[in-house]
Length: 193
Image 1 (cartoon, rainbow, N blue to C red):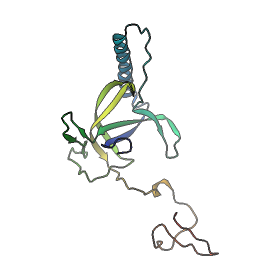
Image 2 (tube, helix red, strand yellow):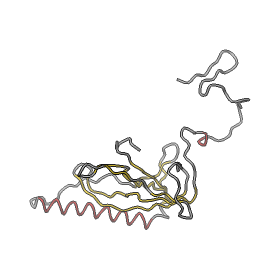
Image 3 (cartoon, rainbow, N blue to C red):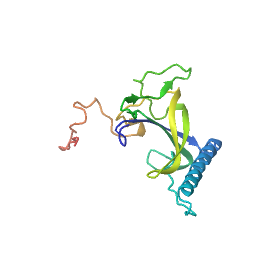
Image 4 (cartoon, one colour):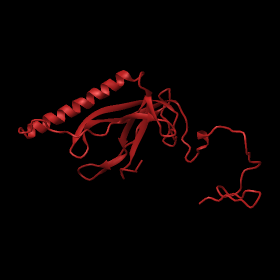
């Protein structure tokens, strides 16, 4: 993903039921609170005149999960793990990395395989506490590797899975010309814009 980082980021978001992830979420929240406390201690050390420094809280990698329509699923959480794809060292040399991805028997999965939504996975990660003036204090979950238990392939642009079969119109033969199609009857037409 290069949307917010030209050097690229690998990321995976996992969905957990809150009740089943209670202990894991408690560990992450404890680390987040420690990060904020450490930032406050450091701010007081740098400026002893500050009695109650205000520390910005960084965005959390933990969010309320959402359904396909964008509605909150309050009994579920979405946890995002990330890895920078590339960068430059202080001496200017470039580096690249990618998460290791394995099948259920720990055999490497080729980089050409596109892991999609609905896959069941285990994630290896490193918990990192941080504080920066711009982002604030918080935690990040650094992606290291993924074990795929149930593989669902990513298919770009295929939204047919978002619908269910209905009674009604059925095409007799596939439309010619991709998205552009000519509908029959009363001069109606459908054309991609």
